[in-house]
Image (cartoon, rainbow, N blue to C red; front, side, top):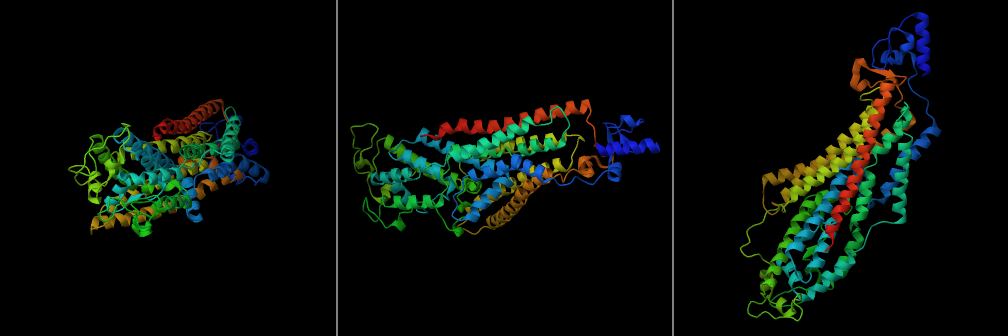
Length: 543
C-alpha cells in the first residue's frame, strides 16, 4: 500500500500516469482511480521483497505445516531397515497419488479375494486361509514351484492347525491409538482455524497462504485414516517370527506316506519372504504398505492360484469325492464337517484333489486386476487433485489472478506427483510381465525388466525431489520470499501484461470469495469421499 502511495505522489508531481492501472490492468486517466501498478513500475519504485519476520514465520510454520509433518509419523512402516521406512515416508509425501493408489489397491484386492472365497469355497481351513492371504499383501507372497506342497497344506487335516495358528499370529492390528487420534485431531483443528482465518471478505494475501497450504496437505488425513482402518500387517520381524512359529504345526506328505513331517526347510509351500534375485522389483521385499503398488500384481496372481486350488478341493468335497479314490465317502454327524478320513491319501492323490479338471495354462494376470487398478487410480487421483487442486484454485484467484510463484509451486507438486505415480505403476506392470518369462530366455522380457528398473529409479528420485519441494515451497511462502513484484504480478501466465493489484475491488473480492468457497468444497468433498469409500468397502473384508 505504501508503494502505491509513493507512486501516486510521484505521479501527481510529475503528471506521469504511465504504469498506473485499474483492477483490470487497464491504464487510468486519474491518479485517484489507480488500484494496481504495472510490473515495470513496481520494480522501479517498490522494494524487491519483504524483510524476513521470524515471529510470523514461526507462527505460520507451526500452525499450518508442522501438524502435517507430525502426522506422517502415524503412517504404517515396519520395514526391516530404517532407510526403507524413510523412503516410504518420502514416497508418500512426494506422491499422494501413489500413496492413495497403494491404499485403494490393497483394499480392493482384499475385497476381491474375500468375495471369491465366500462365493465359491467351503472347506475346513478356507476361512483362515483367506484371512492370511488378505493380510499378507505387504509381503512378497508366493507359492513353491511344486504346487503339490501347497496341496498338502490345503487338504491334510493335520495342517488345519497351521492355518489357524498362523492366522492368529498375524491377526494383530496397527489401528487407532491416543497418539494417532491426537495427531489427526490436531491437523483437523489447524485446518478449521485456517478456514476461519481465510480471506473470504478481504484481500489479505498472507492469510490466503495459510489456508492454501493447509489444503495442499489435507490428502494426508484420509491416507492415515485409511491405513488405520485397514490395519496392514507390515512389521517384517513380527511376520517372520509368526511364520517360523507356525512352521512347527505344518504337515506335508512325502514319499508314499499319507502324512509325514519334513524338515522346516521343506515346508515352505507358501513363502512370505524372498531374496532380491527372486523378485522382479526390489520394492516387493519392502513391507511398508506404500510399496504395495509393486507387488499387487504378483500377489493377485498368487492369490488366484490359491483360490483355484481351494475351489477344486471344495467342489470335490461338496460332491462327496474323497481324496483316496479307492475309498468311499465317510459321512460325519455334522453336515458342515468333513470327516478326516475323506482328506487323506497319497501325495499324488492330494495333488490331484486340488487340481481343476481339464485345467489349461492360466494367464499371468489375475481376473479383474486391471479393473481394480483403474478404480484405485481414479480414486487416488481424485483425492490428490481434489486437495492440491483446491489449494491451486485459492492461489490462482488471489489477485492478481493467474499463475504466480505460489500457484506454480502447487501445480508443479501435483504434476510431478502424478508423473511419479505413472512411472512406478508402469514399472510394476513391466516387472510383472517379465516375471512370466523368468524361466526362459525372452528379449521382450529382458527389455521390459530393464525399463522397469529405470522407471522405478526415476520415480524414486522424483519423489525425493518432490517431497523436498513441497516442504520448501511452504517455507518460502511463510517467510515472505514470494512477496515480490515478479510473484505478485502473475508474470508467469500474464507475461508483458503482468501487473500487481494493490487495492482489491468489490468485484475481485466477490470472485475471490466464490473461488475460496468452491476450493473449500472441493477439498473437503474429496477428502471426505475418500474416507467414506474406504469405510463402505471395509465390511466386505470379514469372512
